[in-house]
Length: 147
Image 1 (cartoon, rainbow, N blue to C red):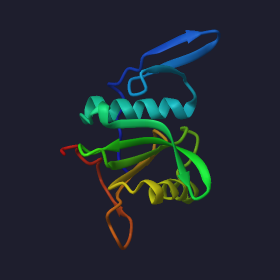
Image 2: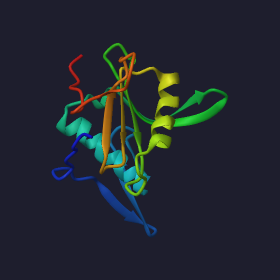
Image 3: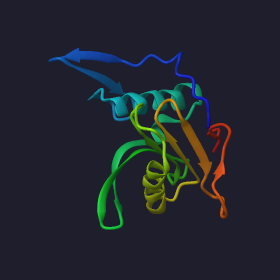
Image 4: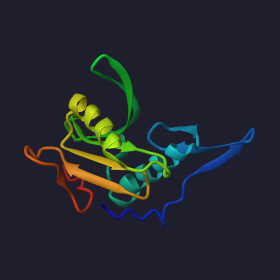
Protein backbone atom coordinates (compact mmCIF):
# COMPACT_ATOMS: atom_id res chain seq x y z
CA UNK A 1 0.00 0.00 0.00
CA UNK A 2 1.20 3.52 -0.81
CA UNK A 3 0.89 6.37 1.68
CA UNK A 4 -0.76 9.43 0.15
CA UNK A 5 -0.67 12.66 2.15
CA UNK A 6 -3.42 15.14 1.28
CA UNK A 7 -2.75 17.44 4.27
CA UNK A 8 -1.28 20.31 2.19
CA UNK A 9 -3.99 20.21 -0.46
CA UNK A 10 -6.89 22.66 -0.52
CA UNK A 11 -9.76 22.04 -2.90
CA UNK A 12 -11.82 24.90 -4.38
CA UNK A 13 -15.32 24.43 -2.97
CA UNK A 14 -18.58 26.35 -3.28
CA UNK A 15 -22.06 25.82 -1.96
CA UNK A 16 -25.16 26.53 -4.02
CA UNK A 17 -28.76 25.37 -3.66
CA UNK A 18 -27.82 23.18 -0.72
CA UNK A 19 -25.15 21.26 -2.64
CA UNK A 20 -21.39 21.51 -2.33
CA UNK A 21 -19.39 21.57 -5.56
CA UNK A 22 -15.67 21.29 -6.20
CA UNK A 23 -13.77 22.87 -9.08
CA UNK A 24 -12.13 20.22 -11.26
CA UNK A 25 -8.91 21.73 -12.69
CA UNK A 26 -8.72 19.13 -15.47
CA UNK A 27 -12.32 19.35 -16.69
CA UNK A 28 -12.30 23.08 -15.85
CA UNK A 29 -15.78 23.00 -14.35
CA UNK A 30 -17.62 22.72 -11.04
CA UNK A 31 -18.88 19.24 -10.18
CA UNK A 32 -21.02 18.01 -7.29
CA UNK A 33 -18.84 16.87 -4.40
CA UNK A 34 -19.79 13.23 -3.86
CA UNK A 35 -17.56 11.04 -1.68
CA UNK A 36 -15.96 9.48 -4.78
CA UNK A 37 -15.47 12.91 -6.37
CA UNK A 38 -13.77 14.07 -3.17
CA UNK A 39 -11.23 11.25 -3.52
CA UNK A 40 -10.81 11.92 -7.26
CA UNK A 41 -10.10 15.61 -6.67
CA UNK A 42 -7.58 14.93 -3.89
CA UNK A 43 -5.79 12.40 -6.11
CA UNK A 44 -5.77 14.84 -9.03
CA UNK A 45 -4.37 17.60 -6.81
CA UNK A 46 -1.74 15.21 -5.43
CA UNK A 47 -0.68 14.14 -8.93
CA UNK A 48 -0.61 17.67 -10.35
CA UNK A 49 0.56 19.79 -7.40
CA UNK A 50 2.83 17.39 -5.50
CA UNK A 51 4.13 14.98 -8.17
CA UNK A 52 4.07 17.50 -11.07
CA UNK A 53 2.06 15.34 -13.47
CA UNK A 54 1.04 17.60 -16.41
CA UNK A 55 -2.66 18.48 -16.13
CA UNK A 56 -2.85 18.92 -19.92
CA UNK A 57 -2.15 15.20 -20.30
CA UNK A 58 -4.84 14.03 -17.86
CA UNK A 59 -8.36 12.93 -18.78
CA UNK A 60 -11.18 12.59 -16.24
CA UNK A 61 -14.41 10.58 -16.52
CA UNK A 62 -14.27 9.65 -20.19
CA UNK A 63 -16.33 6.90 -21.78
CA UNK A 64 -14.81 3.61 -22.92
CA UNK A 65 -16.13 0.28 -24.20
CA UNK A 66 -15.38 -2.70 -21.98
CA UNK A 67 -16.52 -5.66 -24.02
CA UNK A 68 -20.01 -4.68 -25.12
CA UNK A 69 -20.63 -2.39 -22.14
CA UNK A 70 -20.17 1.37 -22.01
CA UNK A 71 -18.18 2.43 -18.94
CA UNK A 72 -16.40 5.55 -17.68
CA UNK A 73 -12.88 5.55 -16.33
CA UNK A 74 -12.01 7.92 -13.48
CA UNK A 75 -8.58 9.21 -14.54
CA UNK A 76 -6.11 8.44 -17.31
CA UNK A 77 -2.72 10.12 -17.51
CA UNK A 78 -1.12 10.15 -20.95
CA UNK A 79 2.55 10.22 -21.88
CA UNK A 80 3.98 12.96 -24.12
CA UNK A 81 3.05 10.90 -27.20
CA UNK A 82 -0.58 10.93 -26.00
CA UNK A 83 -0.58 7.20 -25.26
CA UNK A 84 -2.30 6.05 -22.04
CA UNK A 85 0.36 5.82 -19.34
CA UNK A 86 -1.54 5.43 -16.03
CA UNK A 87 -5.10 4.38 -15.27
CA UNK A 88 -6.59 5.49 -11.94
CA UNK A 89 -9.76 4.09 -10.38
CA UNK A 90 -11.18 6.07 -7.46
CA UNK A 91 -13.63 4.78 -4.90
CA UNK A 92 -15.48 6.55 -2.11
CA UNK A 93 -13.64 6.42 1.27
CA UNK A 94 -16.14 3.94 2.72
CA UNK A 95 -15.61 1.49 -0.18
CA UNK A 96 -13.00 -1.07 0.80
CA UNK A 97 -10.45 -1.97 -1.84
CA UNK A 98 -11.13 -5.63 -2.60
CA UNK A 99 -10.67 -8.12 -5.42
CA UNK A 100 -13.98 -6.87 -6.85
CA UNK A 101 -12.68 -3.30 -7.17
CA UNK A 102 -9.38 -4.63 -8.52
CA UNK A 103 -11.20 -6.66 -11.19
CA UNK A 104 -13.17 -3.56 -12.23
CA UNK A 105 -9.91 -1.67 -12.71
CA UNK A 106 -8.31 -4.58 -14.58
CA UNK A 107 -11.29 -4.79 -16.96
CA UNK A 108 -10.66 -1.13 -17.86
CA UNK A 109 -6.93 -1.88 -18.13
CA UNK A 110 -7.63 -4.55 -20.77
CA UNK A 111 -9.23 -1.87 -22.94
CA UNK A 112 -6.94 1.08 -22.20
CA UNK A 113 -3.57 -0.73 -21.85
CA UNK A 114 -1.60 1.60 -19.56
CA UNK A 115 1.92 1.10 -18.23
CA UNK A 116 0.70 1.69 -14.66
CA UNK A 117 -2.57 1.51 -12.79
CA UNK A 118 -3.67 2.87 -9.44
CA UNK A 119 -6.63 1.99 -7.22
CA UNK A 120 -7.55 4.26 -4.30
CA UNK A 121 -10.30 5.15 -1.85
CA UNK A 122 -8.25 7.99 -0.35
CA UNK A 123 -7.22 5.86 2.65
CA UNK A 124 -5.82 2.90 0.76
CA UNK A 125 -3.82 3.46 -2.42
CA UNK A 126 -2.31 0.69 -4.51
CA UNK A 127 -0.28 1.11 -7.67
CA UNK A 128 1.24 -1.48 -9.95
CA UNK A 129 3.48 -1.68 -12.97
CA UNK A 130 1.10 -3.09 -15.57
CA UNK A 131 3.99 -4.13 -17.80
CA UNK A 132 4.83 -7.03 -15.46
CA UNK A 133 3.98 -10.30 -17.18
CA UNK A 134 3.82 -12.84 -14.35
CA UNK A 135 2.31 -11.50 -11.12
CA UNK A 136 1.10 -8.06 -10.16
CA UNK A 137 4.19 -5.87 -9.62
CA UNK A 138 3.07 -3.70 -6.68
CA UNK A 139 4.92 -0.40 -6.26
CA UNK A 140 5.95 1.21 -2.97
CA UNK A 141 5.41 4.74 -4.36
CA UNK A 142 3.71 6.37 -7.30
CA UNK A 143 5.89 6.54 -10.41
CA UNK A 144 7.49 9.87 -11.29
CA UNK A 145 6.22 11.49 -14.48
CA UNK A 146 9.44 12.07 -16.39
CA UNK A 147 8.64 11.43 -20.01
